[in-house]
Length: 320
Ligand code: ADP
Ligand code: MG
Image 1 (cartoon, rainbow, N blue to C red):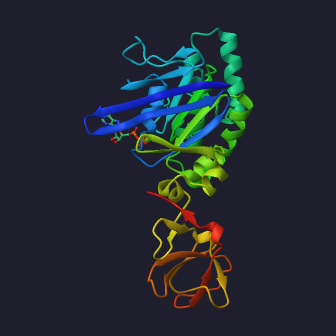
Image 2: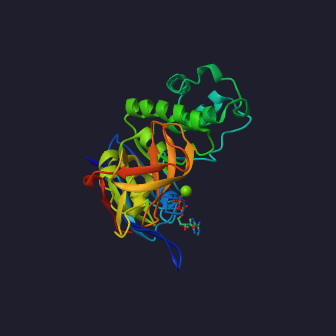
Image 3: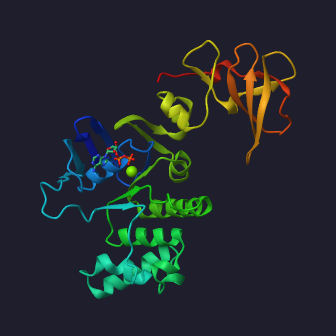
């Protein structure tokens, strides 16, 4: 069942700048999706329009049967049902964790407030920190408080606009994995926006790729990886080697293997020690093309001669 529906939304801030162009998207209730795109691709504009906080130039947003009204059409912009969280999401610095979480609940009766705050402290494993002020928390814990606060009034939709960008890699990974379980248990509809494909994949397999204000591909992670719609999408998954003399033909470093002899002869120019393999920068004999190759056994040194090969079905044909 389609639940959140974005219909041909466009946004033009000024004459020569289309931030969004005919953007359509449908998200079923309870789904968690990631929207990936480079900086400036229109992600924040889209989320603000969905939340009713930005005036679109064209198009409509629906939550169920309800049309989302923009700030021109609604006296108090925004909706309780749709909560937007971004990186600079501000907590109240002089309030404790539990006071911050309770803040949106002040209109509700005391017993419910108390019960809901307890639930959220427990859900986000913040109980031990309930009496602390935001400055006494790590970045990851602060973001959890922000998310708990957004969840306090039981929103239907949670929009996450690169909320983890200021966290270090380990904190971020742990937080995303924790949130994944929480979102599943709550059945809340989530759109997670990021420029970082790794982060997106930690949260969900459902990918939407946005580029220059347009939705260019959607699908599960494996489909998008195997059949990228264009060069931009393929590059989100990493470096691509160009086949000499064959424009628009590429092979991924991870799809190249080594032969004892034969294949494509190449010389190692540079070796970088990475977590899972040595990344080799090699120059192909003849064409002079520079490729990247993964040396998982960490066998080769700079100056070594290699014989490279790949399966024909691993070749990607990609247009710009
Ligand atoms: P992202 O979140 O993917 O980085 P944004 O939605 O913030 O993308 O921006 C998309 C485009 O719209 C960019 O070219 C940006 O410069 C422009 N833009 C965003 N907000 C405004 C604004 N308030 N006024 C003018 N241009 C804007
Ligand atoms: Mg943004």
